[in-house]
Amino acid sequence: MENQEKPKEVIVSATETNTDPSAPVRVAFYVRVSKHSEEQMHSFENQMEAVQVVLKQHPEFRLVKVYADAGITGTLTEKRLGFLEMIADCEEGKIDLIYTKSLSRWSRNTVECLRYYRMLKEIGVNMIFEKECIDTRNVFSEMALTIYASFSQEESRSISENIKMAIRWRFGMGECRWISVFGYSKGFVVVEPEAAVIRKIYDLYEHGTSVRLIMIYLNENGIPSPRNAKWSARTINNILKNEKYIGDLVMQKYYTVDHLTHHRVRNDGNLVPIYTIPDHHKAIISREQFRRVQQIMAIRLSGKYGLCQYPFGDRLFCPYCGSRLKQHDFQNTAWAKGRGWECVECHEFLLKAQGIEKLVMEAYADLDTENIKENMSRMKPERRKAAEKLIKYKESGEVKEPHFYWIDDLIDRIEFGTFATKAERVIIIRWKFGLISTRPSRSRKTPKEYAALANGATQKIDHLGMEIEGNQREAERSD
Image 1 (cartoon, rainbow, N blue to C red):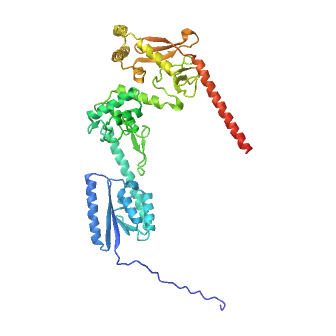
Image 2 (image 1 turned 120 degrees about the vertical axis):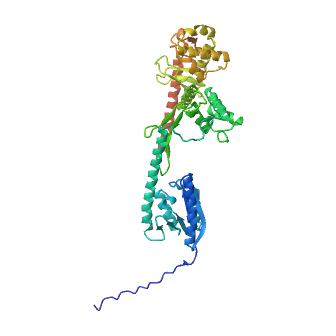
Image 3 (image 1 turned 60 degrees about the horizontal axis):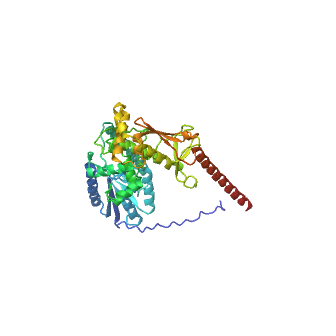
């Protein structure tokens, strides 16, 4: 007992604080309403009145500013400019306390709520949520905040699902929400000056003009765009794809996959339904022209690896295997510069595109319209329709070169001889009005010879590439 050490003396210093209890607290009020409806805007006024009440109840509060967001979602802070301005002022040391009516006004996203709480806590800014009786100056505030924020987020999800169900119910009843559409005023009333621009865009594209050239034409001629800005390729593409211009209404083309991020994806009809009302309103363009434009767009988008189907589409067929021909650009080959149609199945047929187009136009020029008129009464309805279009094109003189719209109206398919003999060196055009035109080919080489040259050039390039790669590996080993 005598050797037992005495406990060491511990000196405890009193903590000092620089906080003056009588000093005013710089307070910011945050106010948010979800929608622009009359009821919600009344709620906005109520929240503003509540600010004055709180200031009277707490004379130590000195108002910095009331930060407000109207008609903005509570799940994404990046869209709330008032909120972001308030956070920036907090970081600059202008605010000591943030007062909000309820946690749902602050945020409906649990993760974002806690992130901003911790960030503000680090820089000495506290928060009060009146409805939930949460004051972050007290202990256990983060636990309470987490619980209430989770409830608020789940409430947001429930509201979102209810709204979706209500919207889909209205879609099913044929009701739609008006969204501004170039060419129409509210109620889908045709605006003729804008409708004329839409018709011009469709006509130009149908007659072979690219989207880029249409854009240049509209801008150079000072034609107003939907937003009175410069025309863009995206705007023109959207007009060319919009089914509203044929009088149809398609609802729920997109849907929201996450109520927190509000990420929207194109609807393929697998998870949620697509609602279509045919002939919902007056059309600006015909269904036939719209169908043809969609085909042209698909043909031009199919140009993978230099292959493209425009303007003949799927009407050219290989005489050796029966497969459809596809177009290729042979700019780097001295023996076949320019475009050529080839069989990508058997690889034994290849002819220059220019030669094919020239023969087709010669066959068109040789058609005797008087003879066709005499036989129209004996034609079936579909053939008679094609014959009427032929006569129209002939009389107008508008067809100077092959375009898809003209081919689509008049030509059923184009075949070729085997080129084995002189008699087989031909191109065969089967017209939709029943006639068949045969034109002799004037190509210097046979399709098989052109194909052999193309295949040889490809093999040579592949061999050269392998040789270069081998040399590089050898050089690396030497190093």
